Image (tube, rainbow, N blue to C red):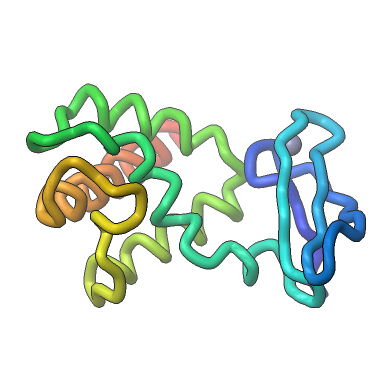
Length: 136
Ligand SMILES: [Zn+2]
């Protein structure tokens, strides 16, 4: 099984037994906390987190999300470990091309489904742009 790593800084994580089926860990380097199901890797346990986390930033947005806000959120994500960014982008792309969830149901978003999908698709583009700039 692949070792779990911190999505923020890439440090290998050591998990401790928590309740029945849950294991928990705190990154030694940056302090980020994680939980996962027993017998699964962190990535397998992530469920909807790739979609849920960025939506958290637009809970109160009732209008089309501004470019400035998208830049802010994107700049946070590109600091994450690149293995996580890759999975994160794949999950979002998959949801956008092949919708499986009601996005407004995640955190009782104030805005519409259309606003949420437009936001995710622009966020994805912005992250790709920033990653390109980073490479050069
Ligand atoms: Zn970390």
